[in-house]
Length: 490
Image (cartoon, rainbow, N blue to C red; front, top):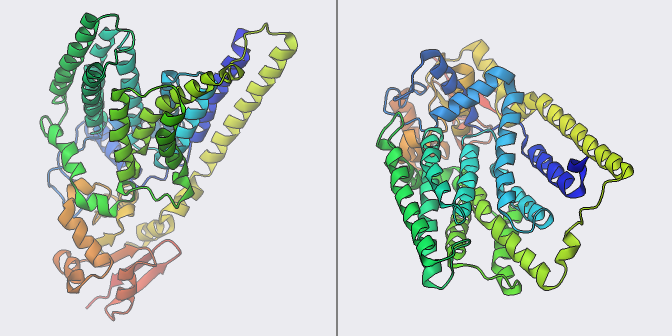
């Protein structure tokens, strides 16, 4: 059986390994309001244009840029429950990195090692979330851009990709940026004497350059084909300019390299600095441009590390492969295609079946641990108490719990805030931080403005400590996840 040859077996097991890594419990704070929104869109056959979930922003304009992703998320959940979401998004993430693998020189072994390093670097951002669809589409776009040096007509697939992307997630703007960087990078390659891969003469280079420029214009034009029209041009920029999001939301913060989970990303960044001095393979101006921009983005925000990995993995693989070839070591990473004896075929089949059994066992284990993961990460018991005892509204809730409350308690309760930070705005987020951390004398203002009667926050929240000390507030529920306090009737 030819597919059981060692190289092919390596690729199969590598792909299955990526899928196993990417299949994890559903705990992202936003997945819950995505589920509810997808459910309501299916029921009403309409896309939301105003906020239905909060009492602080109810009825105000809302750009639900992830509407198509939410339909996908709810569709997977309705068909196969939590297991469907885990498996579906595990496949999306694994697919994104398999595409990166196919972009790498040194396949399969060197490329596999570099791709695995990039996967570990990106893993803290993985989950059931629309951003993973952006990761996959960005990976496909990079494949198209690189293969287009041999086949420029491939570039005409990008407008369709952007059209799908803009309706799945506002990360479509990343696609536009990547195309623009390739365009500028190609000009720099020519200016510094680097010819494009596969271009035989100046005419071919010129055709591809102007084809890419035209495709960028067409892709920008199709962005308006979404439920929110031209508003989607400005939306990504508004998000990036939000100071509150970059201050209070952990994934928008810079990576803390004291934490082991960010060490693979640090290793990649250091490798891209050190390897050019060791490898005979020279970096092209385009590659330097792409690496510089994405490295800055990754150092600025954890959220951007996966995008950096998409760029860095093939470059690292090429430099390592060049270093191995210069030293005559590369042949040790190449297995000769030998005839498959029955014994070899049997052993490889046993290895493959063993890994498949492990994969199935791992997915089943994660699936059955969903309830425990939910209780560990979210106030599941407190929500059950609220649903049963019905404490009075309006209710002030923790930012990370708003989406969970929308899934579990809406429409009985509307939230004070949830993960849609763009809807609430910087001023509102700053006011919440002032209240939560008891900054100055204005921390009471939300209670006066909104008439808050119930508070649901973590036990160590400074606001909880303050309210416990006030005579007109009492705790009616407490566990290690949450405390529920209500204002006493006057």
